[in-house]
Length: 263
Image (cartoon, rainbow, N blue to C red; front, side, top):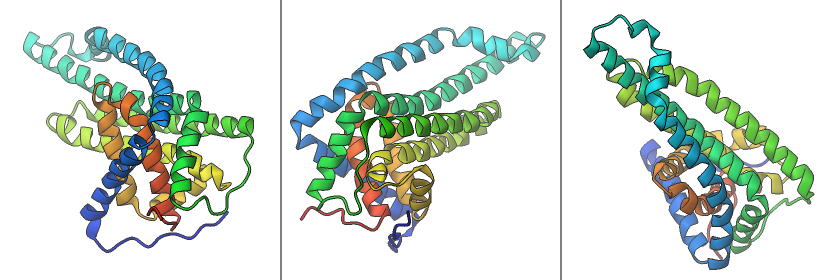
């Protein structure tokens, strides 16, 4: 299904990036004004969050052993260089774990809380004038498509995460440039994942949302990176997840050239 693409505003790449950040803030405002939905939206995020916090804590606990496992070449080095190599390896492992955790958390939470987040997204659309081109989507087919798309996106995060993990061993670059690239990759994947509900509501699939979001990539990255950073903050993923769904609905409407102003 083809949809019109909104023209990118002439505000420069940086300005458009912060426009995307602003969509998350607007989503937070819309979400806060619906206390009932707030509570419903937090419940699935709490369940998923507990699982992923436990998983990441386990990774952090065993990170020294894992760092030694992936750096056998350093066994014969001096103690100083061996320790430095394993600290770098540990940081790279934690970075990879963080990227995979954030993307996987979003995928799992959207599946667990599908009815709740669908309602949040619908409520946002109602406030903005409804859903042009809406189609009836049965629950089970929608859930199956959502799971399939989420699995593909998690697979992509692994595909990107492995070379980023390897690049983490490069001195200085691995501790400065690589985390920025990781946030950009994670932000893009999060944005593509979070806009699923409003696109499904219009009968559009994963290739459609990718194509529409690419029309103004800086805005998409601004939104996605803002969500990614919030999700790295302790309890941030749990508290921000429903607002991210609301903001993603705004992002989807904007990418499709539809109103994002309450009338």
